[in-house]
Image 1 (cartoon, rainbow, N blue to C red):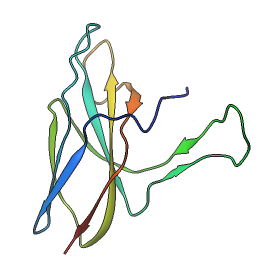
Image 2 (image 1 turned 90 degrees about the vertical axis):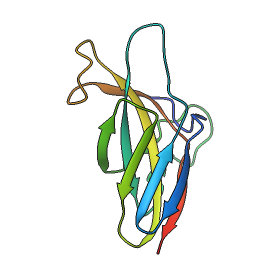
Image 3 (image 1 turned 120 degrees about the horizontal axis):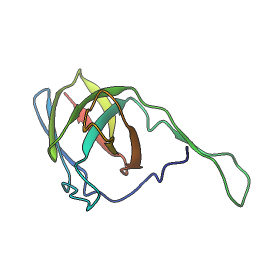
Length: 112
């Protein structure tokens, strides 16, 4: 199912040693509770076909975990990392299930 990506969720990152703290605006939609899927990779993982018009782009990043708050702390290995946050939900409010319905813009950091 197509999901809107590169949405401004206010995603920001700060690095302290090997700790990367991600923060974003906590969504409170009228439809019910949401949770967040946190993704991290060495590159953005976003690719689109080169033609004009309606395109079905792909976003491929490994998932780090989930949270129900607007904050996540990662212990990242050294190097350059790209993070994204996806808002997800399901009728059980269970982070083990559910599909993302919005994906944030990427944020990049360098961990010493």
